[in-house]
Amino acid sequence: MLSARNLHKSYGNRTILNGVDIDIAPGQITCVIGPSGTGKTTLLRLLCQLEKQDTGEILVDGEQNFTPWPKVTAVFQSLFLWPHLTLRENILLPARNHNPSADKDIEGLIKLFEMGHFIDNYPNQSSVGQRQRVALARALILNPKYVLLDEITSALDVEQTAKILTKLTHLKERG
Image (cartoon, rainbow, N blue to C red):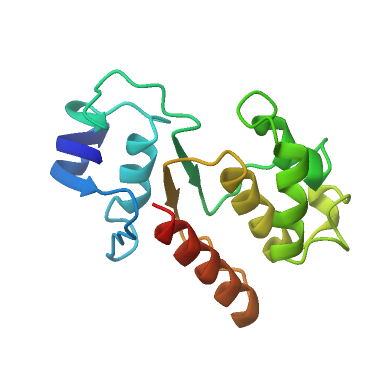
């Protein structure tokens, strides 16, 4: 279980999160819904420990002092691709030390997300939708227990969105 208790986060005098509790079970799809600017992305950044909460605790499988990555990984709307690496290299680089079968696994992801015709391009040679698929593949190749997604289908067409949702359903079924 990925859990947070009594999370608080402020930037300056602006309170973003005020006493948030959440439990995310493996094998489940949990959605956080709310208007823009209400702290959804901040919550995800705290849960994967990209930022530190002001107060409160975050636990992964009952452990408070955990190394989040690759157990907890996230894909954010801004994607964070390295511009000097090809899209293939962007997927493989984080996986090198965490997934011994990454070179094999990437082929399945390339096929699933139909990336074969652009996988060896650089990010600046690719559409936002293509980069979004690469960022998701980069997270999935780590085989994380928890995948946090921040509007990852916002730049995708209906067909690619359906494929991603199908893949997420398969992951859910695997736990």
